[in-house]
Image (cartoon, one colour):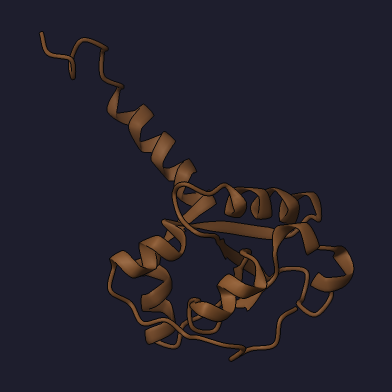
Length: 136
């Protein structure tokens, strides 16, 4: 028996349920990029890092709104049924999780873009720089 099979594997139905549930909460850089490329963007991208990091490089079209500054008032700009896709620095950062939590507390829809800005770079996608969109 290997270290892989030492712990029993899950029933395929449990695997299906787990990953279907997980994908309700997250998306990835490729899917976000593809939606933007195909002009099928039916979500708002929020970069939840600080303003200086945002201005250095961010996902094109992303709006800078750090999770600590998310308020009901700031979110009034968007309809209540808006889906927000949030990202932070990358897998070593929990800023996107904190942002998703905050959005949930404000009764807003959210998905985390796994990988964050690091994942975007790893995919080789172009960045925007500066203040190409007003900060919320």
